[in-house]
Length: 173
Image (cartoon, rainbow, N blue to C red):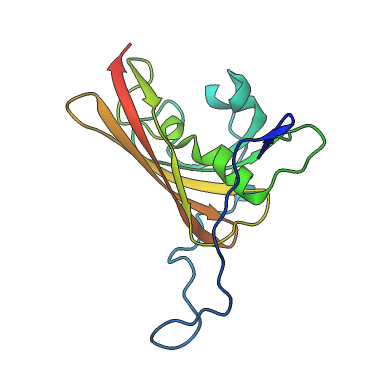
């Protein structure tokens, strides 16, 4: 991914061709179909979509849960603006932008009373994503010592593409 004139990261993995399932047939894709398509629900007008730059740069469509609610959440999202002016975002970039929001859409505790700082993000994809829309089904858990974990299943409109995890530092405001 270029930043200015220097490259700061590249998603790379060797790809095989014509994989066959060990028990016959084609290699299986994602186990799960994606949640309701993004066009089936109304645009989100919450603080997430209106109060800060990142939130406004994304178009959000919640299928379950959402900002201000505690518990798991499922949302479709897509970029409203390019990451780099004049360049079309790559499919992995679209996934990475949304995957960083798992702890922002699902909360084990209220955002009004606690802060959640993600200290890392791991994205694992088993196939290349396609299209503008990415879906994330996220759940956050918090342990007794101020640590938390968000797990997100990632989808495009064809189905599951992978997962993301975020380790969290959690503290009272």
